[in-house]
Image 1 (cartoon, rainbow, N blue to C red):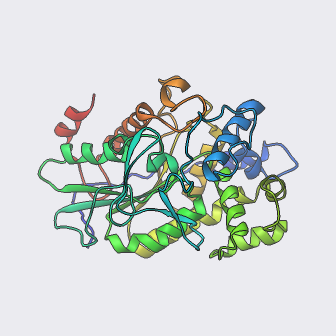
Image 2 (image 1 turned 180 degrees about the vertical axis):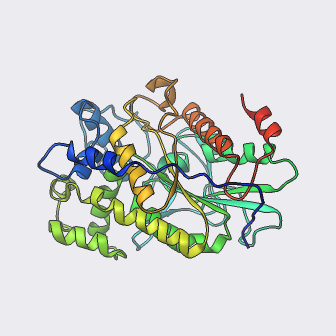
Length: 377
């Protein structure tokens, strides 16, 4: 049974007017769909900046290609990629999810402490049977939500858990289970949601979304074809069939042929998130994260993500303004690694906290406002 308290009024963001969505789509350049064009990024962004981000994320997802973008700043000598055998953090599995975090891990990677629990999640040990009086939050996402390059306690989800427990008073205990895995594309998040969520008796599900989701999706489907992994979704199979991509394609050739398909798949993924939330009877909120590679906010991408949420009855929290008060070198790990650093994670949490305060609390609960306000800097 899910944890519920009275007096909470759910507040969903007001839908984008249909006219605005149509205007966004109609005003985009021809030659490819408006959705595809918008999700390819702000047209004002420099080609060099796009190449740098592209190259960096490719190096993250596929350790065999650290030189994908020769113009991008390179890792220092001796750096070990997250997904490599040398790092020993992930286990390859012969399914569409491709890998999972090793269970019972305690290691130093990238100069940070990286621990997993007995189930292989970067989260403290929990019992599947939820303790009485516990409000449990499940989180799905990719590298920024997993906490790539920061210590365990610096991840924004850990800040959120600690803050909720401080400001909730005697009402309940909050427990956040972070199931995010670096490299998880939107369709992989959907599959993990389908496979994992029902086991935890959750009261709320958070699923991250990012302007880089299309790049991550393309890289994942390419890897799935090369590794001959079973494809569980008809919409992914359809995209592969339409474009004629194959396991023999290089990543460059794959991207050229698959151009735009990852973005077209978004509507199916968001519909899948919504359907799974209804099946589980658990409120699900899409958390829209800011770009961490530069100050560009990709406004058109954000608006289209919001539109997809509205079309599928999904709640969302737009955190894309989280880095407004910081320069890029203040929220990035380094000039060659554009994941958010500890300060960036704190900024994401601050934006998330303020959004929850404006609503009164998580779904089904009202936070103690005096305690919450005291916790607010």
